[in-house]
Structures are given as structure tokens and as C-alpha cells.
Amino acid sequence: MLYVTSTDGKDVVVKRLEERDPPGPNSLNPVDRTIAYNTELELARILGSLRDDGVAFVNAEAGWPPAAIFEDLRARGLVSGSYLEVTFSGPGKWRTRQK
Image 1 (cartoon, rainbow, N blue to C red):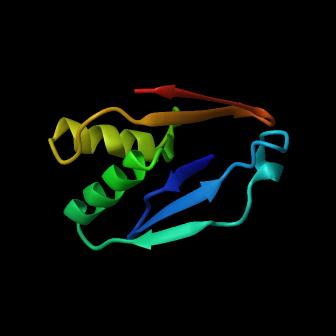
Image 2: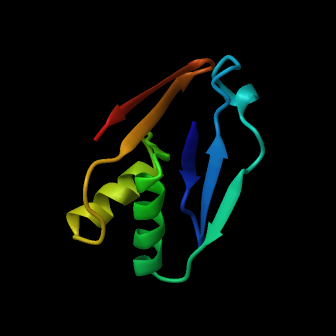
Image 3: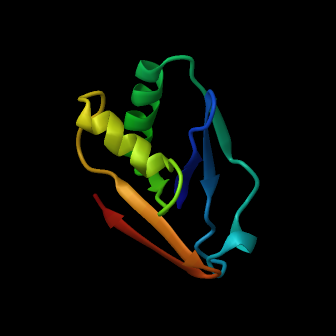
């Protein structure tokens, strides 16, 4: 499964969770893809395209995770539709849901 781990600065970082391995930090490959953006509109276009491709967005209770950024952009009309959220609750513990 591909998922967005960060939208910090001017890059969207996409990583891969290998489902054949036990889920958790050790099953993550190095960065699979980094996509640069310069404006909020470019960020919205990139996130919308990744969502359309079935890429999940990390959510967490603290900070400003990619899922929260997607929701903010959606609330302001810059993206639309649902997305796949992924959350991690410990080594080998992750789940997804549509939001």
C-alpha cells in the first residue's frame, strides 16, 4: 500500500507499506517518491491525484498530518471527495478507513 507520510515544506513524501511483511516501521521501504510543489493549489492538485490513484493519507492525533491537510483543503473547496486514511497504533498495528 502506498501512503502519504508528509507534506512538510515543499514536498509530498509517499512511502510503501509492504503488505507481505508484518506491518510496522521495519516493513517500510525508503522513500518511494517525493513530489515537489510550490503553491497550495499545486499541493491540492497533487493530493487529489494521489487520492484518485488510491494512495492513503497518514493521520495522527498530534501535529498536522497529511490526512488533516487533505481535510482542510477539502473544507476550503480545493479538493473534493473521500480519501483513504491510514493510522498506526504500534509495531505491526495499522488500519485504514474511508473518510
